[in-house]
Image 1 (cartoon, rainbow, N blue to C red):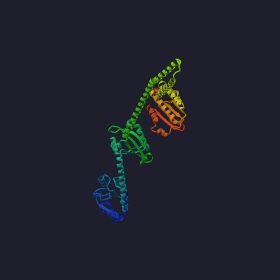
Image 2: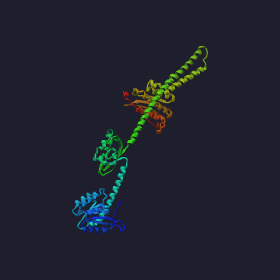
Image 3: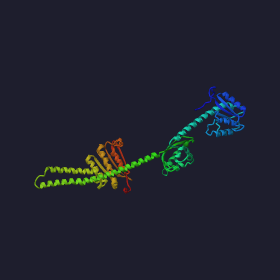
Image 4: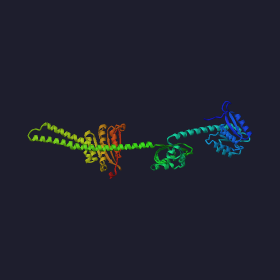
Length: 503
């Protein structure tokens, strides 16, 4: 709030001016000047000690101080006032000096005087006294408002659960302020500001080069900063922080130095721990899913083998008995029973059904001839069953690769699921499977000329087939991408090659 000193009616509160002056004539001159202006209450002291006691007692709003006093100089008066009120809440002082005392006036301003007037022989300074007092009190109010605002801001900053700081930018970059929360790292603000290398020294060795490069670039160019790195507190342990800062106008002159960085260090250790726990959980779930897939494939293989050995053998035996019965009837010169022929046809249909079930469970060609032959065979099966024009092209360099059993199964199942989706949902007339080898990866694509999958179809959580393909590929470090449009859908699987596959 700004206080304006104006001529006031007698009923208003006057401004209390303490005149510390040993010369009675000068005091009387000052009285006349203030009385003419109106609105002032004058207090007088003719010694420095008396004036100092009155100033410290809170009786005066401001002090008009003569430099030459019988017991104290003006500088000694200012020193005593500052020592008794170190918080800066003493009344402001205007110094009266001689005509040749510019040096004294400058020293008085340095020691705490707010203003000064030079006593001239003609007494013109008396005309300036009311306006000078008014200006000094106005500045005092502004200064008090600024200090209160700074105190409120500092209190707010120091209540935030983060380390706040202000850093200079440009060639002379460095810290100007750090909040008391720096004790989180085991240091006081004074220690942290005194050693510019502490931040770099406290960075985790694995993060230091990257983090310090980012911090240095931000301070040198007055650039926004967004970094996450680890700090090592003095007492041990490890602290994850997010360092974010933005440039604001400063007082560093022109160029980058004209801005300062206002930033905060936020402790994100808890969220990082939760993130790492979630990542571990995801990895464990992924390993569990891969383990279950292996178990499922082994179970499919076992069931297919049992059906082939048990049921397949039983049906083949039944059909053989029926054929023998028919042959014996013909040898005896009689026509075979018609039901035997119908039964033989039913048994043959059952055998073909068993073969299809076995193939769906686990194609024998995958185990016997490998994944490339299995992909060509399955493309043919899709063309035969669904009436699609389905082709499979294997690049010779890809065909030369020998994938292990688990990768072969993963690759076959992804292509199988992709072609199943083409048949069920794409409305396509043609599909194409391609495999080619890149420098360090195997790339397999499945494309069709259907209606194309919509973006929402890729994002639906209930699209278990798509999710399953993603999980299968991730289990081996692969990347699966699906894109759709008016020309159809393209699925691309990129599988990193193992060392023993290079060649």
